[in-house]
Image (tube, rainbow, N blue to C red):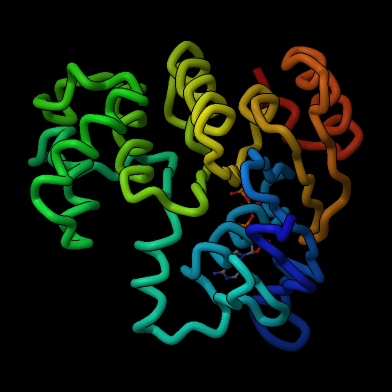
Length: 255
Ligand SMILES: Nc1ncnc2c1ncn2[C@@H]1O[C@H](COP(=O)(O)OP(=O)(O)OP(=O)(O)O)[C@@H](O)[C@H]1O
């Protein structure tokens, strides 16, 4: 199978001469269609920079990023907006919902921006909201629902366009542990039952234990990789903690 995402020798340097920070230093990895991959690492290891380069929000200093064999580092400004709306869904720590729109309208917005036919819109919003378990909340405004429901809405908005790749940056960062667990179980279901490919940045071992594979970054390089395989989530969680303590740092953040 061809990888969906193929990262080869990607580097990102900030600053110049003696003050260069190598945020990413010759990173290579692939993501197969249908994988749920986590990127972990201590603060400053390059996780967000990696995600920003893949999401075309930032440009790498060198290397190639292929999505479906297309080099996204070579896109023009014009192509980038179209590429993003067609191929990528985003979920961030902050839900980024519009407060003056209902949850349903927030999800719809992703479709109206793409000029989807009117009759299609309602149906698609209902289907995706059903999958995320927020069907009964669609007429409420963001301030009328919980953080977990807001994040489910953000996920629904990210998925309504059926993106090739869902990119998540600390999606549980603002949620309590019960809402985090519910969201992560739903993400696992979306991945397992609908084959949605997910790439998620997190520093949290509990969150990462829902992935099928984890890449660990250290000082801008991939330090090691772990696969869940047939292990259950708890055993995988313990293994992640072991690698984190070997890496040092950030262990205080885990639950
Ligand atoms: N715009 C920038 N200008 C200069 N240096 C930067 C910039 N953005 C990131 N860096 C540096 O690049 C390195 C990687 O940063 P990055 O934000 O990718 O790390 P991270 O793993 O996401 O950290 P955190 O978990 O704290 O969010 C850090 O040393 C950071 O200080």
